[in-house]
Picture 1 (cartoon, one colour):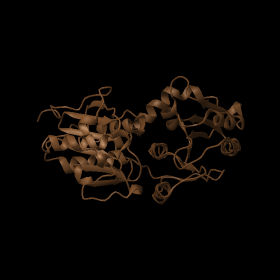
Picture 2: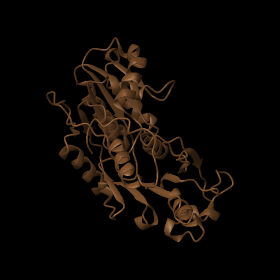
Picture 3: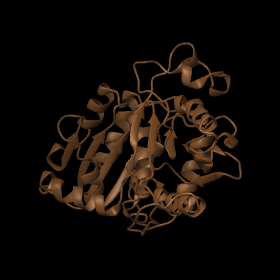
Length: 329
């Protein structure tokens, strides 16, 4: 069979691209990446209200036009209506895989991959514990080797603290940052601290002032991002509760993962965090690290890729096999 022609369709947001890339790599695909821009007023409306989705695309983004690919992997609200339209216009010859809750009927797609905490129902829905990503244990080990010199002077145990920030349901003020910084500073060992694009600079500064600089290394967005290397090097990992992606990525490391609660939250986030704890993937961070425990590795992307191979095996001959399967979802 000829090579599978595939597209990744997103609005370019890093988290969405990472999920699509992670699944494509597990399927052995080399997709054409299409970044779309939606015109006004469609970008303000739910996907169900787009009468002609492909006409809603702006020329500032990539075109979605024939010849249609064999397979589309898409993620994000802006990709929902265009991906469903491609499936219709191809007469069903294009297999459409939508990652995350599409907010319209899953029947508009061949497969929908969504976390259980979103409670998406359908015969074609594959439910995951967290988000998809491209990280593997092998990739973390390789990155660790590249970045180990940056933290060679730190005492053990090495603790990675991945700091997020406010979003629609969580807050992260300077007072919150000070409290978290004090808890981190009281831990024994060396600290590797990263901040995200959502971390308010003033909150990051307050948190850093609570740390012992002699046994801390801090990355605030300058230079090469050491995040993957530090995930591989860490003896334990603390992630703030505001990000499904950060927690999911940490849980593939095989290291003890602890969730540091920020003020706020939602029922969906609570369901996600409870699933991590129930599955043995993570525990709560209350200011101290529990005695050493062996977590269950979370590798949704490999498990999902195998399910897709099983379901679509009659239509496609996927190259190779999933990269790794070191845990369960």
